Image 1 (cartoon, rainbow, N blue to C red):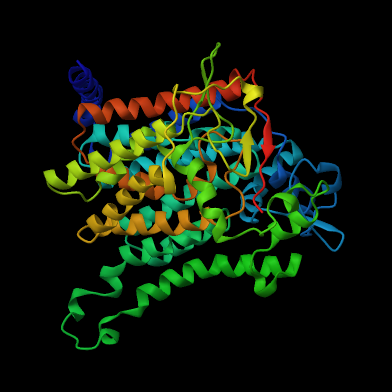
Image 2: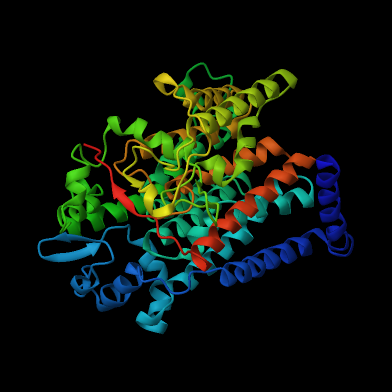
Length: 515
């Protein structure tokens, strides 16, 4: 039955697209799809949006600082519900400056009345239009192109982040746009300078995205290590530095701008980012200093992130509503089940795919059996007080595995992905980016961007996890692919509608000691 239903769904998509393929040329198909994805996404995002957000630091900064020819914001004291970095009696942005610069034209026209959430929705819709072009280059069938594009646009927590539109969420909206654009510049026109510029722009929105640089180095390896020089005896003679210089120059422009801004405003050492340190030292309640005594980054934080990244589940209740999303976050596979197909990227042959399937069953099954508590992020920076949500245990028993054994299958899956990548450059490049960014995030003192749906920080590497998913699924979508993509979209629709349209339960977030 499931097979028949899945195949019927795929065939329905093909039948719906038949007139587009029959009557439009390839170029006109591209224009039609770009417009359809932009306006379609715009409508859905608008109908489900959070309306105007109170956390509009970029709008306030653009209006009261940049347009006034200054870098500090004089009205910040009256806007303490937004996060600011305090230094020498002045307030500055905590987040990088580029999102405020992007909003500058809109603020110049509408002033402080500019709706930051609507700006986020427009940018998210532009990303949808660009994304389907990228997916079209990775798949052969139009139906796969559309369904896989819909997976990221509506089947991940990017939907929730875009329509939230608040300060920190806006940085993700913009960063994801630039990252996907950088990937497109890498895979299609093969332009290292353009890719570097776009990656640098993403970095000046979300700092961790710079750690995806190895992806671009690997994908441009055919340019800086060309076959035409294969006969050279010396490795140095084989390397063509021009593509690497172009890539570095593109990234370096934005890195340099950020360093100059950091030094001029906050006197950061060597221009390295220090706004979060300034923000924490100005915390009036001293709650951060009490909970992260080891500092912003520490290797001891790593195991504390695993529950949120791999084990976060919804909150189950013994009364209506029986299942509610947790504002403390959900794991990547609970938010977007289709992401498990990322582990099949590069897996060739029945044995390899069977090993991946077994490991996925062990990974998900182990988490469900061992994480039966209502608290989805035990030990995290912020946890949930079960009494405020009426949370109950999912199962009548609890499997307590020693040495964090429930997480080992995920580690094995990642190692398999790296092994498969030895024979598939895109797979290797994507896993390198995911690991570099993911590792840095696990050493960070905050266990997630709560309140949130899913794991907001994971959006820094989700573009590459999505590319792995596209690679793992391929162009020939089977019934289970369609089914799991549909499930991913339904889960994120549930999170969006519940939190923004029907939230009646306010989970009580409590501090956890990360000292």
